[in-house]
Length: 302
Image (cartoon, rainbow, N blue to C red; front, side, top):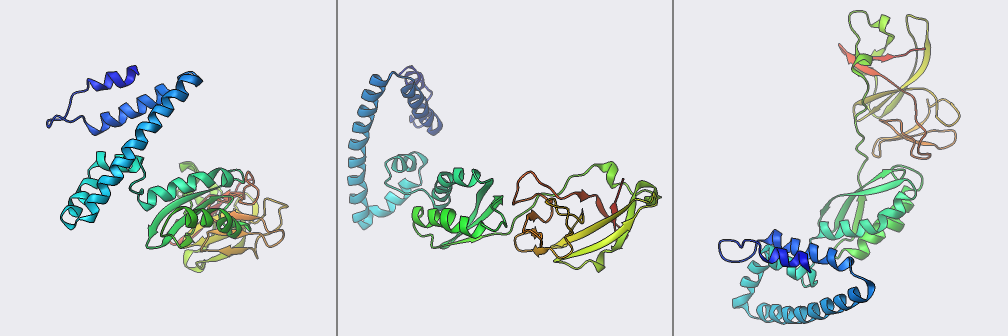
C-alpha cells in the first residue's frame, strides 16, 4: 500500500526506532487503504492480516506467560506494558484490557443510539471502586422512565461489559447557566421604567422550594410568576405549564435531579432552564432575574 510505504521512510527517533505516532499513522493509513480495495482484494488482504495477527498474538501470549511465571522477569514485564507502543500492541491483541474508563465509554457508545432515539443520552463521569457514576441527559434526566432506562440499558450494559463494576449511580443534572441579553439584565437607576419588578428579598426564597408571586410593572403589566430555588440558584418563570398553561404553584421540585414536575399531567422540566424533558421542544417561559442589593427582581413585559 502506498501510504504504508510513505511512512516507512519517516525519520526514526534518536535510538533508531520509529516514533509512536508515526507507527500509529501507518496502521491508520493501511486500514483506510484496505477499505478502498475491491471486495475480492479486500477479502484476501483481511485474511492475510488476520493470519499474521494470529501468529503475533500466539507468540506474544507465550512471551507474557513466561515473563509472568518468573518473579525475576515479572517486574520487567510490568515496565514494558507502560511503554506506549507495547501497550498498544498488547491492547490490539487483547492481551491487556483497556482501563475501566475507556472500556466503560466503549460500552456506553453501544447503548447511546437507543437512548438518543428517545431524546436522551448518558455521560460517564467517573469510576470509583466498583461503582460507575453517570449522568443522564436530555429526556432521560428526571423523567418518569429514567429508572427503567438506567436499569435496562445503562446499568445492565456497564455491569455486563466492564469487569469489576457492580453498581451504577446517577448524579444530579448539571444545568448550563441561562444566557439572556445584557440589556435585559440592566436595572439602572429606575428599574421600574425598564419593566423590572421586585419580588422579595433573596433570603425569603427558601432553597429547594417554589415561590409563587403576582407582580405588576409600572406599565400596568401583571404576571403570575414562580421563582425556583435549586441549590441557591434562582430561576423565574411565568406560572404556566407549557402543556395546558395550568399553574405550577404545587409542582414537585426534585433538587437531587434538578427537575420540576407539573402536578396536573406530570410534565417534567429542567428546573433551571425550563426545558421540557417529557416533550422535547416545549419550554417554560423564563423571565430575566437578577439580585440587586439583596432583593430579587424579575422583568415582565407585555
